[in-house]
Length: 79
Image (tube, rainbow, N blue to C red; front, side):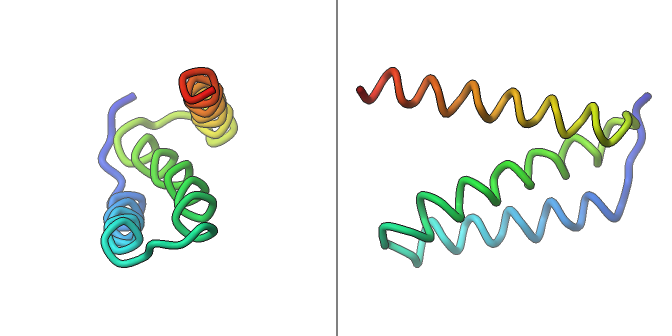
């Protein structure tokens, strides 16, 4: 069940560095809120696939459900 996948680890690192660059250097109304959210979902997927040997569709659906739950909670709290 637990593994260490180097390919997904490197993708996770690259996406994390891109997210840091967006957070530090980009201050607009499109890239930071929209592209950043999309990249964070991909980052979470790569992180899950780095350490767990589960089927891709299960990982994708789990990350999608988690991301939707976070977005709904953000909407409810900021409403």
